[in-house]
Image (cartoon, rainbow, N blue to C red; front, side, top):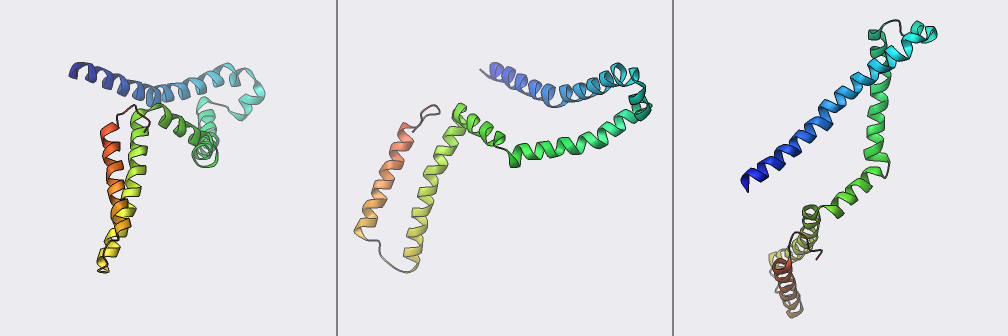
Length: 154
């Protein structure tokens, strides 16, 4: 079990390293090299703007990096794309779904505990209705704990 888990964890870390770092850098270098030596070098008008590969990389970086930062910012903050990705991840990942469901249950519990603490701090007694409500909440939580699994949508 531990060997299998180690293999899949290593595979995950490899894919992250490959896709986020190696492939990203490799693609950037490949794109800059290919566009310069196959396109810019062959056209005198472009060669006048970018006389050397270093000039091309510098100008492309000075213009491209801020544009890409703005696109990344827009993706996370201004468009619905990131929200959709997050929604899909929660729908597809039972662990994320479980965390969300547990959090929803805990919010109700925290509010109820807060109300009880406030009432008791004022030296007030809990009414019979509040005791029934607390008992019902406790039963619901026990049922939730008893029936929850990673894959269930309760």
